[in-house]
Length: 317
Ligand SMILES: C[S@@+](CC[C@H](N)C(=O)[O-])C[C@H]1O[C@@H](n2cnc3c(N)ncnc32)[C@H](O)[C@@H]1O
Image 1: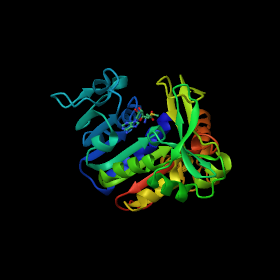
Image 2: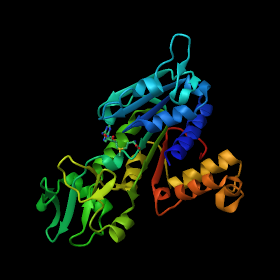
Image 3: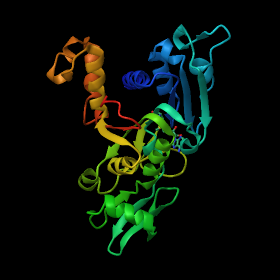
Image 4: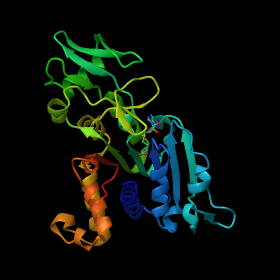
């Protein structure tokens, strides 16, 4: 999946570059292990890479040897040895910024990507009682108690995005995710912000997730959420709220990873009709065809939200 994601982001980087040639910024916000950024650079043409200012941002430090392996600046003769033994020009600038992406994101003329960042941003959980919305408090064992009334700003968010909740419904308050999305967009001087994440709409939250979506992951396995530092805690992103928050900043489009996969397929295989209607999938080798089918599964990875915010109109790419 990571390879297909990097391929589509590389296509977008090329489009942005064609739209506005010159040096281009490529920012991976919440980069984790930095694989996505490295993947896009590995797939881009040397002429594009050599004009790219690549930035990975995360609370975590860069993996050992990461910059040297993937992003190192060109050595004196203008070449650098890349992962996989490929000898190419390195990016113009490469850096790993350790800290909060809201602050560390550089002014960006190009592409900012936040892949599974927003669902990682901590948020409060509220429960609807007869007396109104109350915060839930939790101990290290994961046991919860109903706490005090929600702050006015959270009450407004809940009224807007969970206004039809029923008694005892639990809702994760998406305000901190809206805020980080707007903060990232504020660093975009020209180009595109892409947010890819697990997401829900208000309707899905009410119908499918009356108990919320908060969960824990330990060693890749889902487990009961306990805020004791032993697991990754995550909750789906209220994407409708993020869209509205970003609408004041620029032109927002919301789709799914499956849509992005279709765009990539149509572009790379020359089919404008897409994989179902045209001959796109039929021309692929079997294994690649199976991979694309998985990536387009709306019940799985294909259902991830793919939100694009443009600071100028790139013609619906
Ligand atoms: C689920 S991981 C995703 C990593 C990577 N984007 C990927 O797709 O593999 C989320 C990452 O976001 C980072 N993160 C969360 N909030 C952040 C923030 N405000 N600023 C920078 N990094 C953040 C976490 O440290 C974690 O590495």
